[in-house]
Image 1 (cartoon, rainbow, N blue to C red):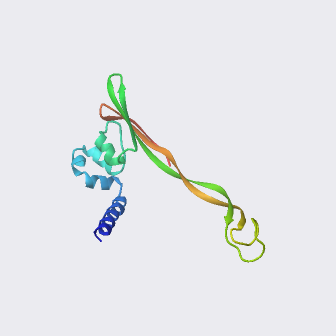
Image 2 (tube, rainbow, N blue to C red):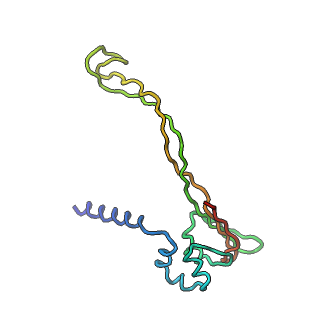
Image 3 (cartoon, rainbow, N blue to C red):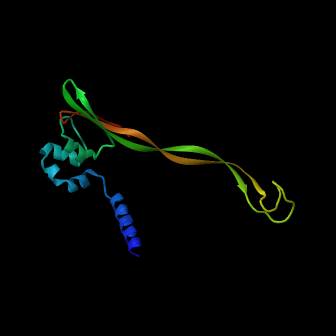
Length: 157
């Protein structure tokens, strides 16, 4: 009984955590101390989900969220870091399926193509349909030099 209760409790927590909004407003509400440290100009941009050159990492996090990938290094003696944001685009595909079955038939003659115990069910025939798959793409990148945005790019939708 106790194990099933703990499982139910942990499953509920996981479900609720997946429902948490990932908007700039939600990030601001969860991190008010970061937001209040920004300049008035940057606070306005962050609430709109916009970034600019010269912004801090905290401002970019509040505006765009946590990056999916980060890389770091040095160039000309200065620390550089790049944040990459990934998105997913739906792509419609055409699929072809061929079915083949095995089953139990009734009466008739026995054998691999007959109607007896262990008889093959035969070909299901080709079928065509459409599927949707999601393909990842780079939605945006932000480059930081010495902790400030030096350049950024965002995909146009």
